[in-house]
Image (cartoon, rainbow, N blue to C red):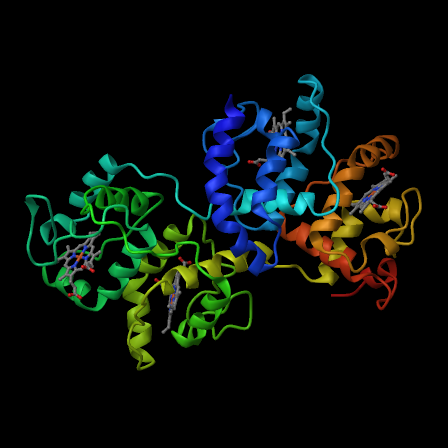
Length: 400
Ligand code: HEC
Ligand code: HEC
Ligand code: HEC
Ligand code: HEC
């Protein structure tokens, strides 16, 4: 049944990503994939088409931005999920040790690689985006640019993105000379277009290209290739280009690379102003850079603890756990959350949610819902603790 195909689909993917995730210090997507089946999620949720249909497909929903986004979605939907679990007689899962961290890593990394593209759509795009006027594939196409069917069949999409980028300085002026706009890619266009190119390559085996990338190497490259001269990643950037942690970047690493390409004109102009040439990438370098960006975004914009104080009070936590976390109707949080990771704290919240909800019902406190940044701020407070700040109840008045 569907569990089998989820295993098949996710296994190869998770196995490739586990070392990457380990380097990044996040949970283990491979173990998370097993938990997705073992904890019964698969009975209601599909990932990219394989699995249950009761809840949304978690490989396709908008939930893909950061740990906080996925956790907040799970939390906000938990009342509706609990109802469905009762209806379908599935036990509400609770988690121990690293389990929830692994599961969320699995859901996060699901989007690392592309969905399989649609070569037929890609063929249409190849004409629509005018590639065909300069490039030939088989018998059709122009000759101003190199043939694109010389690529090894099945070449990694990121590798094609790297070639495209590297040839930008020659290709873009050629495109402009023909009076055309520099092509841009929306949504999954880049995936479909590359699927078309990949399906037409030579039979020669593809040269090894590690699409899973090495985030540590990518971080170094981000500096040495000059990206850091214009971009920050979560704060303290020079501000010439957008902060690549905070900007709305979604999708697989290939889609992220496509987003970089879309900004070619403005970026190469800005580079010119700094007297630098657009960087070129060799070997697996582009994969490394985007592995770094993708992994960095897992931590989202971890919110400040001051904001966390506000969230803690406004969502009603203070009413039961005390304004300084000392405990009241609910237990003291000082010993259980302070110094823990965000994953472990969220796991504790999740495990205790049913009893909290009962108590909330009694006290007529509405079930708290979180935006991703609110959850980030709250978890930062719970991890950092209350001790070295004045009691928030008094500090709130008149400050700011
Ligand atoms: C009995 C069915 C059922 C089970 C089991 C279940 N879910 Fe859900 N889940 C749902 C439903 C239904 C929704 C949509 C709820 C809503 O609309 O508020 C949902 C929503 C979600 C969402 C939010 C999705 C979005 O796009 O916002 C996440 C994340 C999620 N579930 C994760 C999980 C995980 C992880 C597990 C396993 C630990 C799990 N679910 C088990 C039924 C289930
Ligand atoms: C106006 C002509 C023109 C158009 C339109 C054009 N290209 Fe190119 N393209 C070139 C030229 C010229 C080169 C070679 C640049 C160089 O020598 O550095 C090139 C190089 C490339 C390469 C690198 C090939 C290699 O052998 O490494 C790729 C990949 C590529 N183009 C893809 C595309 C795609 C996809 C499109 C459509 C979205 C497109 N091109 C549209 C002219 C064009
Ligand atoms: C000289 C400055 C400069 C350098 C160097 C630079 N960028 Fe950019 N980048 C920009 C600017 C400016 C924009 C926004 C362009 C626009 O508004 O169209 C941008 C946009 C982007 C985007 C799209 C962001 C979005 O929100 O869609 C990505 C991704 C990106 N750059 C990645 C990189 C990477 C990776 C490197 C290093 C290889 C790099 N940039 C080097 C200036 C730069
Ligand atoms: C209506 C009272 C009430 C509210 C409001 C409430 N909690 Fe709780 N909370 C409880 C109770 C009772 C428990 C213990 C449940 C149990 O033993 O399973 C608990 C348990 C916890 C735990 C687990 C502690 C441990 O020992 O592992 C955490 C973490 C937690 N709450 C955080 C929060 C946060 C964050 C908020 C605000 C969003 C909140 N709670 C709001 C009553 C509440």
